[in-house]
Length: 426
Image (cartoon, rainbow, N blue to C red; front, side, top):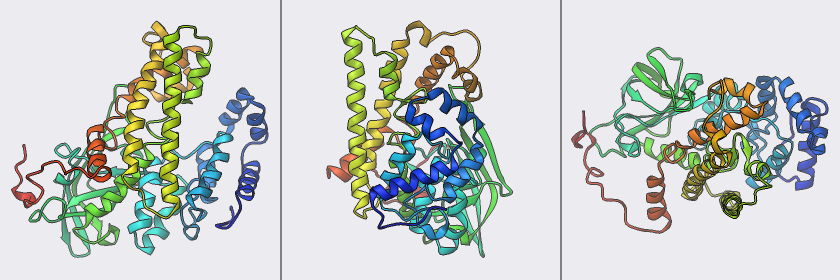
């Protein structure tokens, strides 16, 4: 177990992190990275027990270094110190938990709003990748206007009975817990009648149906709630104040979707922008060289803006609207990046022999030149969702206009009406 060290120097923290990695990664991993032996690193990665590794990384605090150490899930480090840790982890190409929704959104929301019992029960297995989380906000009739949702939660003693439907729920089919916002009072305006819960995705009455995407994957789902009972002890925040809690989740979501290594990703086929530049470093066409230079410049600007946001959090501020800046930048940049990657492949970027785009197939493809083309195509197709997921680009612009530039809010005649009186389709 790593030692909580809020006053440790950057050099000491780097050495502590390297020492832990040396003791826990497969023998020779770090030396291979330092030597640039990518083939050996790939071979050692194949020998790594991913589930066991994620558990050890999380329990040591390195998966969530800013989280409070007393819950067995963090190191109580400042954001600046956490960056030092993450720089070491990134340098040694350390595998990370895929529980980005739990780590990026669920954990921060629990830390901000959860009871002591919730923190003790939920944070450690979340950080250790033992319990996956999902976000249950969007509905068929409430996407960008999340506050207009209609899933109902009715109090029944020490429990709540929930009925309704959610959609576009990433990882619901693999999740133990879900962050659920439901309408507990339809007689007040839409933002005031919501309550936030942590729901057991294995509870009776929860039905999950995967939605197949253009890539062939099914990472999104629709989720149905039929008389699902949730203990009141799993309520986050006061009854009727679910929107305030949801804002905490949403602000952290935009931060988690906006940086390198995020869902949007500063990556082509799973590799950094530098991979694309290296792949085409011999290009002589001046327009190609200009486009490569442009994506490099944009990626650096996004990283610098992320650093500005990290510095703000380092001062003790919560995640704010600055997350919308980098979420907007990253989503639109990643689409341009993936389009460039496909353009540069020529006909190989749109046609190949055998195999599909499903993630399982890619494990075989990535070992071959053919697989590299396929992963690039998959990246292009997956990127089409970037400007929709986690808040559309139009919504991001609204947030920036209202909360950063101080412009008037978008007209919304339903804002002050009781939710039950707001006209709805269907």
